[in-house]
Image (cartoon, one colour):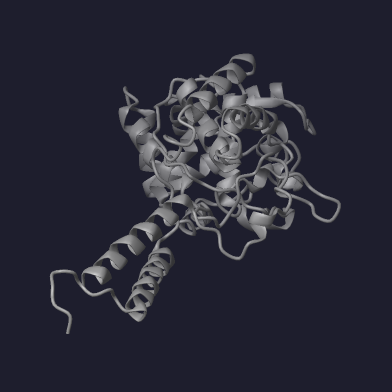
Length: 371
């Protein structure tokens, strides 16, 4: 046996085992990691991303105040149909009718704003910020710009590559849905009756076409010209003055008292039987949702509502989010990326995963050398 202080070189088999263990550890790590978003996902890769979104949204809302409510609604529709992965932004193709072209989504607006923001981000940080995150941040900033709370939200969503109009109806509450139906619908996404009451507060900056509520002010029953008796009579008369029977184009504020300010006006309206949509009025027919509406309707400060809305908004923003290479980063929000050599590869390793593997290999091989 050789003497001296130098250690014998490790057998090739030992090194091979060390490498295999490192690879197995990495595979276990990747396999056990749940998809998730994170706060500040672009801090290093595109640190100006959120500032760009806010600047563009501020300019867009200044030109057209109604866009704030439109972007907020567009985001919620995206999240409830297939998850917050930007599928609502995809255009139809010759072989597929996309979500945005479903009859139920014909009133949605804001696509051009998202496209404009995405173009700015692509110029600053090509291929980094997803369309799903652009929409999430734009919706978040809609609240802030209209004097609502600033809501820190996690980012890092990836974009889906599928959008089908057939998915819309099964994942959209009916216009005349009961409060029980609405609570059950929210429950499918681990959202509560409180979340329903809180997120409905987004209607404080929204607008709706006359066609969305005409059945409440005309022909509510089989008899002609009968209105919904749960609506305040004076409000009904006012709505009839705005919307003639059969009007499909006129837009009406969901919160008639302050339709461009994120405040408690919506709850005050609903509490006074002036909820524009049937689903707004339905909130008064459940103990939990009614209690929340009445509490906010009588509140003198927005603190509780703002805190609740921030929490519920973040909960909604996590629905079905794609991360960890389960989606893509679209270069244009209206179309999926064309296939590329890298996207066709069976395994895609992130830089972070590569660092983990390298570190594991170095550590384990070093240990093997010592042994």
